[in-house]
Length: 169
Image (cartoon, rainbow, N blue to C red; front, side):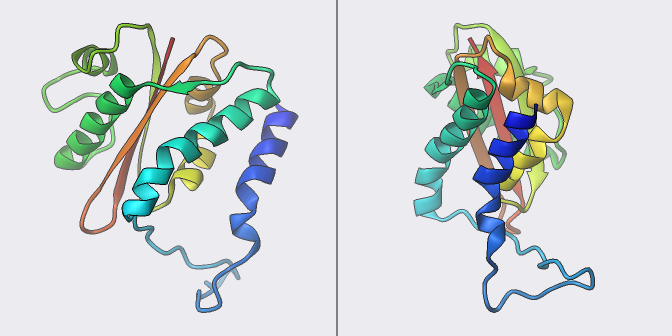
């Protein structure tokens, strides 16, 4: 666990070490969060960046790396958009579908391990960091039997982001 935390802190803290010169500080002395915007370049970079960060965390525990799976990415994208339409972060689709139902519909034939979801204004790395701080969501990412990963999001015009991460084998 200490190795996971150390890697997480090392890998994720670089962005926190500096702040933009025009960023305002709150009464607690911490930077006031600014809503993150996913532009075209970020949209292209996020899946591989998330995969790289997840695999660094897994390596720290001696777990095998994951690979991106197009079907799981598709299932994650469908669910992120659906959560936004429902305006709530939960694991059931508006049609009553489960994570397994959505993965099967997207063409995934493997064994589904789990699904992490988030509703935030934060980027992918901050979202991963939050998932790693909670046992249930950390277990989805760190399951030693996992071999595949799907990651997707939907960003509303308000800049709220609905994140979905799915693992399988």
